[in-house]
Image (tube, rainbow, N blue to C red; front, top):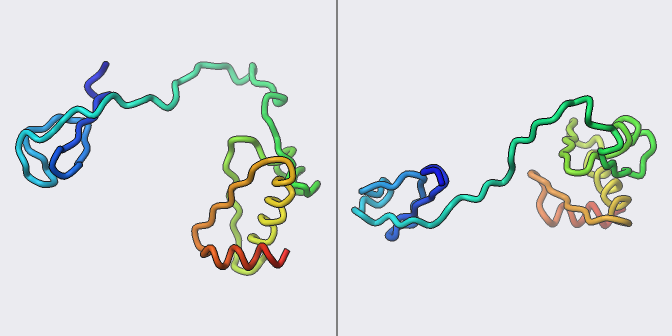
Length: 128
């Protein structure tokens, strides 16, 4: 186990670090750090050759709009993030709600918005 895999927490203020320190830089207390455990690795590097990857290996989810699916190479790729941008008022939210409703017929959907309140989202989806 590497030193970088161990995390420490100050007993006084909760400050966390990967380096065991004598004095907490947050609250100033001495000898207050305790080991809180080993950090779990979330992924591993995998070596592969691009020619070994088959396009059939990519799971695509239909948006319910043939033309959009065609633009996206057969639909939304499972596990990917697709960013939709444009000027205000051109229908991004309406389009995404319609796509979400189509996908929700068979799968779970998570809608994330950085600008709209819950009230705005609720009122917009009720219009559909």
